[in-house]
Length: 356
Image (tube, rainbow, N blue to C red; front, side):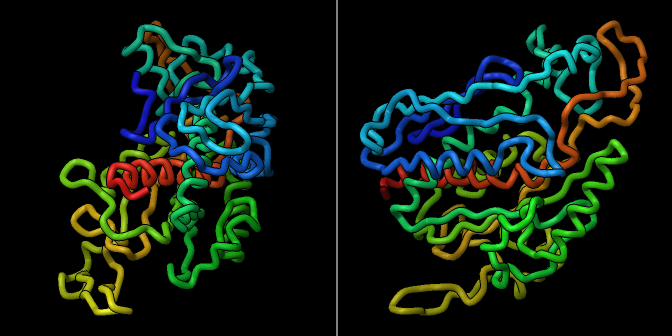
């Protein structure tokens, strides 16, 4: 099983949803980075379960405990190990799933690949694993701050409900003002009501998380196989329920001509800029100094309380009605995870470029 990401700045994840703890090891963090533990905890709080009426009611404090790699508030350059203790597992809720393959879940494939699986909340395949990513991402964000690089994500679409504000007009300060994390208040209210409706119906819904990276210098990205967009895509698609990635104009660009999509170069302040940013800040797999923006498509949560047809481990047809504590939509809690994986990826590429 692949549990480590990165080349120079690496993160190794461990733990299961219903095990004693989850956590990780961050290696390759430059020495001398101010590690603001309150900031790291606040990032975790954004992902924490039970924080709103449209998330799982599972209650976890998600208090991070650092074990190594930090001295007097600064990174020492040695591995940073941390743990987050699980406190509110209801493992009995999953006993009825012990021998059943849930539709569109990892049960069948894990069983076939490893010959064993932890059916309690999905075990290693649970989205609870992403809490460790958020800690590693928070450390990466603190390092990126020293280069004045920021990473900000938000919910831009839930089902058929999507934002209409142009990217350059979005007020990112509004992201944390509502429980769905959409910076367009009227649209956010529609999204919330829709998610609540589907939750009451025992169903789920997917959508899109968008992300904007500001301050990235020119020249980050390593063609051919470590292009910045390919590394970001890989990072995003490693997140639970992520099913699609595009950047810049993305799939919308298929409707445009080259004359409409090309970004013309212009002189600006003694340097070079572009008149437009259809490329999303990336050309030839390398950052061009403009804002980088991308989108991640998330599918509806697979575990729903509606009755579904499936099979058990004896290959007998069964009718499944799952119960337990589940999110009706991954989107609000996916926002900090998207930011974390972007930050981890960007810091690694900056270190590869030797620009840190």
